[in-house]
Image (cartoon, rainbow, N blue to C red; front, side, top):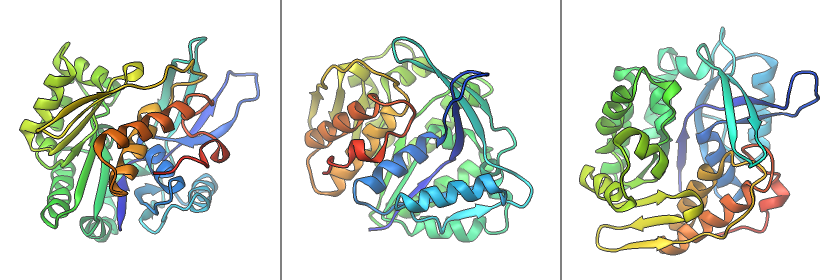
Length: 303
């Protein structure tokens, strides 16, 4: 099975100035990609990096994780994006980004982009997010829609996490328009209730699921944080609770859920069991600092 994930992988720094903090990597789609690889799949990560030593480090690290790095374009003049993360006493995180000139943002301007998008259109599974959409202009997003349509027409899965981060958009209206334009290409929607509330107001999970079904998604899993998830196939809707865990760092929890859910569905498990695996992987992720937990911490989690 050919799985392609499309997004941005960045350098992650943590801690405070004057203190030694770890240098790692992260990014919502990258977090999903690493988790899928650790769950025994072999996803290809479609993105762009530079030709600098930091980019080389990232490619090497991702290759070691079992990710197919053959779809990573290398920009001659740009470098990876960077973000800093701080975590409060409750494990809630805040981010600062330096990514406006990252290589990933220039992917559609690179000569190899056409061939890479053609390869992506041949995928059995295509995964991307609202943050992916925020990296590009309307023309590039339309091209992404065409790729998604090709995957869908061939009987493949287009999985989409409606990650909404206000700093990535000029305003909420621009994000809503982009999400609604892309929604019709999606077969599996993985929205977060809090993000949907920022875009559409305080809505119930059932309303969120119905909106995604109305746009064309056959299956929806609405992430509810500590309240679990609502899973809907249109014909049936079920709440799947999670186990309460005191978090060390909530970074990457939703991404871990996405990976666990998708891996379980690809293994033939029903939506409720897929949500349970997503909860398990997310629960282990928030027990560790950073968006990507140590490999050993999730080694025994499998579909």
